[in-house]
Length: 227
Ligand SMILES: *[C@@H]1O[C@H](CO)[C@@H](O)[C@H](O)[C@H]1NC(C)=O
Image 1 (cartoon, protein in one colour):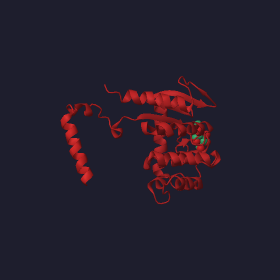
Image 2 (cartoon, protein in one colour):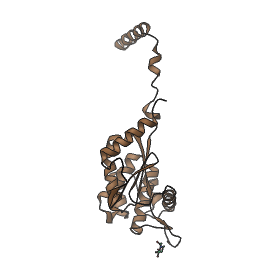
Image 3 (cartoon, rainbow, N blue to C red):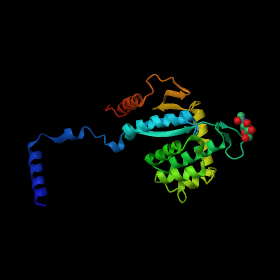
């Protein structure tokens, strides 16, 4: 108490002696209202290239996760003949289920939680992505209450929840509108910067974690520059 009073007193003296403090207010950008860089990965949940992409971005997010708003945009073919999903997923209906689970986790949970969920799915091997068991195990691993929470309800036990199907159809439309055709397509701040489809290509700025980190930092600085 005494020391804090003393400190206040000293601060008062320092303020009285210092020049006007306007300089303090020239850098108002708080980390909470900075502009995040939108990063979109165009993916299919059971696609090996998507799994690789997401592992690269796991390393990217460890470095610049606080500067980005990451999302997944799913690739599938709209198909009115598909009885459950209304879209055909290239790696089968289990992939549609995996897509639904990941979208529902993303809708109802923080980035760190849903991203952990996706990474866990990928670690189970791609033939296990989309199963009810994998979803439940990975939700537990990510700290998501799947059985009694909104994400699990959205996805449904079998990955055919009505809300989840709506999310998948919307995501599919969004991918088509954005011109996303290949899994994995990497989009940083609305610009397609790289594709991984069997091999890396159209990656002018490189395709290593360090390359994506550099591009994100540049976009972040541009978005948050003083002028
Ligand atoms: C549309 O869905 C039906 C039913 O699953 C399937 O037989 C057909 O191959 C699909 N068409 C395309 C273009 O994927």
